[in-house]
Length: 159
Image (tube, rainbow, N blue to C red; front, side, top):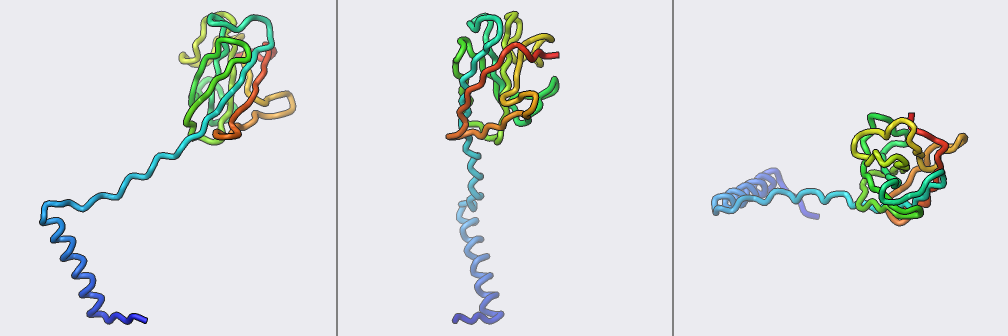
């Protein structure tokens, strides 16, 4: 067992200060600690289909949104937005660090909404993934299990 007296401890502490002072005077500055690595995000992949009236194409597409909360409203900010131009098409959001996330789809039936200008116009078909009359929004966890199939119709309209 190593025993250190009070004087030994003082000498050890002084040696550290002297070494640091010598290092600083030599023109080399002590290195700051390395910044923390950013949190690695996972992917969320949504295969989305609109089963209501109308076709999905370049003009009347589906806009897929990711949110960090299950009940998006007019003041909500999306984590990501992607258009899908064919029925059964795929939207992939890469490097999502929020978890869980919630998926919303909007069918742009009048070709007047791109998802970036606030909420959709009144009467626009939209849905939250997993929501039915009896169930709340389903959470999606980014990563290997972050792949879903989402089908919605025109029965739910933005108010």
